[in-house]
Image (tube, rainbow, N blue to C red; front, side, top):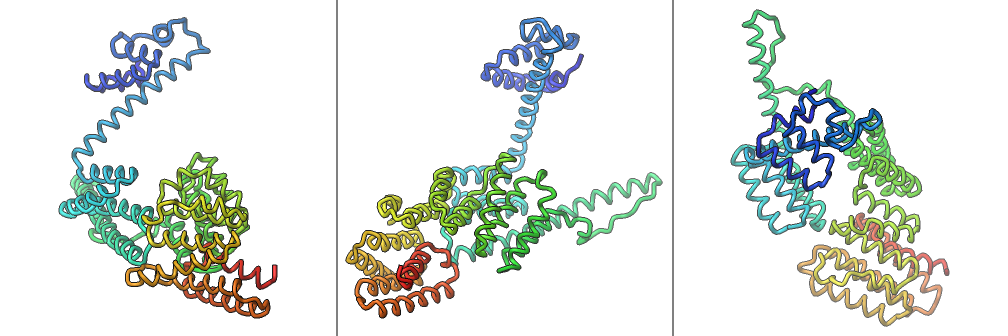
Length: 480
């Protein structure tokens, strides 16, 4: 009786058999060890299942327990499959230096070995270009893109560099496509010519560019087109495109669960960005339930936008719970770590706990990127106000403005000085203007100035220190 595991073992060399044996012995699964030895060393070809069961388990076979033997045979087959695949993978890595380099680069990035990663990327990219291996260049660039998006500070120069990288990859994608199509055409031509020699009629391949995509407008492509339009749109149009993208991926959600989860994330994030906070929260919850159903880890960016939605819904304790639950995921991504730190600080601020807000400020501000350093400096402006310390509030804001003045030649975000001056105007007004009507009039002017700042610098619309200042001004204008 020949079994699948037996067939696979017969294909293996002596050193491969030895490798399988070591792995099984290390597993300390006695029944699997016994089965392996019987199939390798015994006369198992002529042994029926009842006898083999007795040799493996040391007791008499029964139909009720036959599944135990079948399970061990399945496990042994899987070990053989894994070894065969592992050996072929090793040969591929030896034959294809580009694949080895790509795996190494991914591994270094996942371990956040940034200096080694940066040094090797340039070398590997140059090697691939010299081999005209455009597919590998494109994949190496994708790893670099991942690095830039996940770990490097977001600056205008960085975004421009990222765009140029993607344009370069578009060229490599086209080169790879052109080459692969031409190889496919060549093989078809060879087969067709053989058919003609054999006296068979056949349709002949047209040689050259193939730009016919009429039968290839698949769901995934339509999904990507829709979410691209969503990113390029605003308002209701943006939401409509995000919904369309989600509807394109929904029918194949069980086949492409990771993409479907991305569809949930895009739709919910667009609703969040367009101020539909209640629907955004509902969509995020549906997406997270889908992720649990399919045993997927939600993307950290999705979790961050969910936290932002909860902030807008003023569910501050829920935000703190979310930050605690996914602390490791945020810590592994420097950009999201910073943003989660900001959320944590402001949750405590909005909950009125200045002590916990202060404790949540990271201690290494001097080593942080300018954007992060400045964000927490604004938090330092708020804490004295919360503690009813006028002198401290004015001192902090004065020192912050001095920082901008001293470093104005090398600042990446000089516009943030404008917000610091608006904080100074706010504190000067509430602490120095005793006439309530004049104070209210001046606060309305500051409120207008903050709104104009946000209109001119759209990316600051959701900055929590901007929202806090507008909220405090509004509260005082209303006399609350």
